[in-house]
Image (cartoon, rainbow, N blue to C red; front, side, top):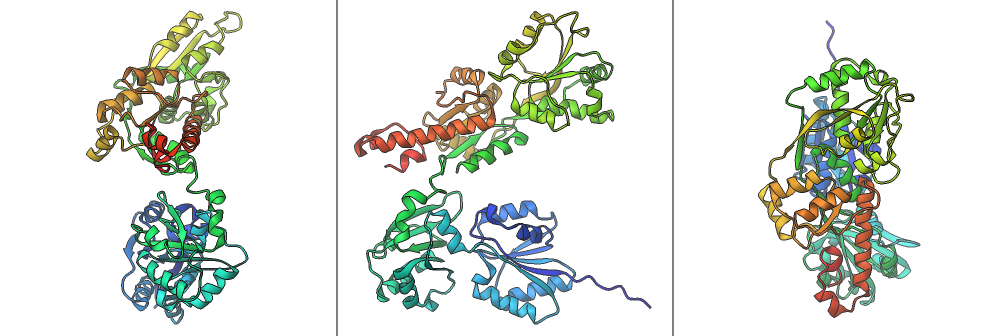
Length: 526
């Protein structure tokens, strides 16, 4: 009789790093993606857990680590014996925690297969994000038990170089007393960083004598940096000095489109809040699009003009329904109103013939679109697949240039449901530092479902048409990029924030307090 061998699971002790999901190693992500069960420590930030859950398998179980090291080890070993892959996710580096080392030792005494995936140490990683270098002789440690610290050795490290410790905020007073008792000069520079590598990381600088009072209000794990290197923060603090750091930015776009803009905003330090204002739905009657697709295949059109990513998506979805692909665009020229639309076309393996080199709008496209010539253009018809609420500017301009235009409804835009009450209140009360509008419809729909943004909110628009609509609704337009694209819009907002910071820095203190300039940039000077 042949017995089926029961599969054996793997155990991984994975370092989550100091908190920024971008600092997870590739190996760590691989282990988490393969995990059936993830046990996580309380020191792992919720934002990082949310990122991990999004990457993990839908049926993966997540639970907090509870009990002594032996209890956690038993959970991991039990899962492995049941054929599951189990991960213990810890803040910083696994071997930076004595309790995790004991767990690894317990697992090593069994036949279970295990690995230890290193992570960026919490103390060292946060020190770098805070702009405090740790050159020369240094000490960086993630501390679980402050009473076990060798303060004499720490004092020596401060005297010869720098020191970084990750501790609980409640233990700061004990660390201060230990450093002073070991002979560290009370005037030695100290930095205390909360929410290290997170969206709201904040560092206060003071001295050994005063850092406990300076860190009043900090909770959870903090990183303490001690030594002369703390004074270099003015020049090296890159994370907190990003142009939009701490700005809460409203992103009113469709759910599918908001991700790209939010990623760019995060790179500049902003905290984006996505509020879908429109939803995209198929046309009520598909007959127009059916005829258009048949006309494309039959050579009825000389040009197809795409004015949005949604239009590109709608046409390709219709192609897929009929088993067609990019080859069936042979002989048809493609024009795109802007770079984002062109990228969507290229994603399907086609290179557009025309993208406006100047203003990326209907007027900009018309300015470069050649009039119809009966000799050069034996086929004189243009397909214009668009939204149901699109303006007539482009179709009318093409007709004036001698083209026959099939203006086809490729998709419908409908107003999205109102956001939660707390979001609506924040919009109207100035809870957002900026709002980015990428079309006239986003302006109309946001005001329709949530109300007008507060006067203190910075209003950034992608182009002149959107600016006109914003003005019609009584909004003050603060930012408009010279080139209508999402990257340029975010870049323009970042540049505006830098100008705001420089303007405020040049003001006398009394004028700063009376300034009408709002947002995090202003608050830092008050």
